[in-house]
Length: 250
Length: 250
DNA sequence: TCGGATCAGTATGTATACATAGAAGAGCCG
DNA sequence: CGGCTCTTCTATGTATACATACTGATCCGA
Image 1 (tube, each protein chain N blue to C red):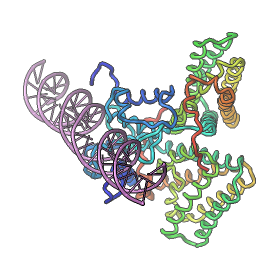
Image 2: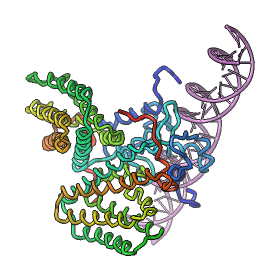
Image 3: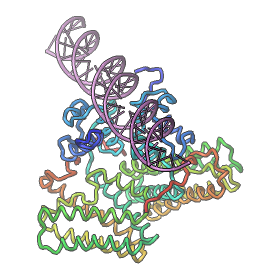
């Protein structure tokens, strides 16, 4: 293998495709021309098609009826559904973690993440880098929480739902960076984090479940705030997806 | 296109592969040789590889670290996790259906399925064909129920979880065909069906949720019965998957 | 002028050729 | 006799060639 880049062509095609869709340079509903994409990404059709099949099975793109693929368009309702679904799945993960019990070591690791997030939030205002750090820590917290459930199947499904960028744990936190009450929303989120860890420690499964569902509603709230203030959105990751898809199955 | 079979090579490869895995002729953990499969299925490597990528993204097979694919091996715990996950997702679907309300027309359609199932269960003993009819009606009931939630994202995820054959709505009902209390278990399942439709009609979201979770436990009970009576299993769909996968991620 | 049909261009689905990396076996050395 | 290494072979990942089906436009006829 050419150790120059040390990455397979398929991976390159997949990452390039994901990026192009996430940043909106391939817009929602747009038809994907294989030939165009091959020269744009510098790979041949074979690895590109592999990437297309993968993204299609994730739901980021969809197969057109008469061949080819389209960038999937999501309606506002679709986004809400996906966010709620994440809440349900993470809620179940938290419940299972509480029921089966977490080791002091695992609890310690996750609490260390909470302390790190606290450290970020003591500042009065949060700059770009602080937000980036928050997004990173938040993602790690959620991953750790899911790990506590000890259920690889569940973890896999959550990962899949999050493959839709707007459904990730930090979806639309970027909205908060441009809102005056940014910090207060993050503080509320962190409050949920602390409470769910406590619930897991105390083996309160129902409470842990409810907390994570409510936690997902924060993302939904951000989404709705963003919709009412549409111009605020430009350039935010995941925004490229928001376009009312024509028909919604009844 | 060759109208002889009127089906794409990719679809043929995918179906053949699924079937070979489900019936156990490709056993859990087995390495998949592309060349062997191409001549076995009568397709070339390109559509076969497309099918492999698809099944890998579904979790039926997995990519080997150094290239190629393996039939995925599932431990008993994995099966339980998948069944529980289905319960959580279907429970959420039922809850949403109850909360948003179902039209009399939709409720009528789903109740017609219940009546059809009732008709099957009045017989004292159930033959092979009655079981087949039950499996079909049961699958349609579950599909209709999920449809009532009006959430395509959720429906899609449930479909994905069920792609693991042992997690489908009728998983391990075949076990019941060989158990003395076969009919009584089906009657209990049907009781759940009726109750959940009633809960949806009465907009009792929490009840509907709990019922579907409990309903999934029936499959789990069947699974456990099957495990204790392992020899009873042979030839059952989904059984080919049961093989304790070596390590389970902590 | 509008509708339809035919034809050209193009894109996708499929097959196959090629290169490289991993695996297996044989031979050599200790 | 055992272990290590080299070689050969095979399988996968990638590139490309080919065939067919769809898309679009243009031309003809009503």
